[in-house]
Each structure stands twice: as C-alpha cells, then as structure tokens.
Image (tube, rainbow, N blue to C red; front, side, top):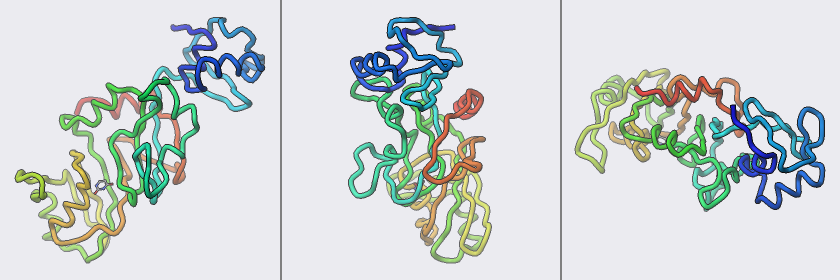
Length: 243
Ligand code: URA
C-alpha cells in the first residue's frame, strides 16, 4: 500500500511542472471515480489507481514499462534528425514523467530507422540497465528479408558464428531458420550495433527488410504499427528474469 498527494500523483505521472499539476486540479480538470479532485493536498492510495485528466483515463504506475510497435522511417533517438523520433508516438505524460533532465521513458536498446517491430520502453533505470547488459541473454527474434537468395551454407555460418569488423571473436545466432528463398527468422542473444545487418553482410548477403517480432516471451500480437501499450506486471517480470 502506498499513498501520494494528488498533486504529486500528477507530477510523478508526467502531467507537467508542479505549478501546471496544481492548475489542472484547481481548474477541475482531474477526476477520480467520477468526481472532481478538489484538494491537491489530499492523499490517495496509488495501488490500482485510475484517474482522468481532461477527460482521458490514466492508470497510476510507479514506473512505466511499455511496448511500442515501431514503424519504419522513425528514429530511436530523442532528438531525431532525418526521421521523426519514436517518442512522438507517445503521449506527452510518458515523455515527461519523473521530471528533470532524464525525464520520460527511454527505449531499451535501439532499432535502426528502417527496422520495424517490438521495442520496450521504460523509465526504470535498473530495468533498462539489466536488459541492455551484455550479461542478460534474453533472446530477440528478427524476421529478416534478404536481397539475395539464401542458401544452407549461409544459415549454417550464421549459427556457427561470423566475425564482425569490430571484434575478432565470432558472434553466433542462437537460431537461424530459413522460411523462404529470401526470408529467415534469426534469434540473437546479444545486441551489437547493426548486428543483423552486419551478420548477413558477413555471409555475403544483404538485409532488405528487418522486423523484430519477439523479445523473450513478449510479442506484438495484434498491436498495430505505431501503437503502444503498457506491459503487465507478469510481462515485466518475465522479460527481466535472469536467463
Ligand atoms: N540489427 C540490425 O542490424 N538492426 C536493427 O535495427 C536491429 C538489429
């Protein structure tokens, strides 16, 4: 059980500066169980709390854990240069929560501008650190379309290990399954820069299309491109479990 004052609830969930949050309450724009929240200093139980701000319903979360279906032509950096940032796909409270310099949720690892698929975002530093640590071997599944037809020897080499340009130690796919003349499903347990593209280049092929379909047991299911959703507590536990 934990409690917070209403103005701290709004501030922690990213509804703006403390002044803005106070203003939202004073203007009658925040409701709880169908009633206006009147006292910004009143305490409220935050477990399983839902409230509305300007007519939109929000759940309270100590930390945010989300999945996003990244569309092609978006960048994972906060300040995108050539393409729109993925962060523009999120409502502003998710980009502001926590306040301060490192406010908002951050992508856990990045996908290239032209890659589509599953991204996890969070504002929990420990969770992000755990998932991006080289010691964390949660499998990530990629659906790859190649420029040239695939052959059995390329698939074998991807699993046996290929040398990338920045490291003499070979990197191997956890699994590689050919699904068509130009398509394969590749499962990786590391997350090196441009890893799929560089691995395919190392076997004399080229990636034409790349989609991340799975991280651990998490899949996008029917989440449309460009959409996001909260992860359930079980999903958070599963994806961050030691492997
Ligand atoms: N490997 C790549 O080459 N690109 C991605 O976006 C992800 C993995």
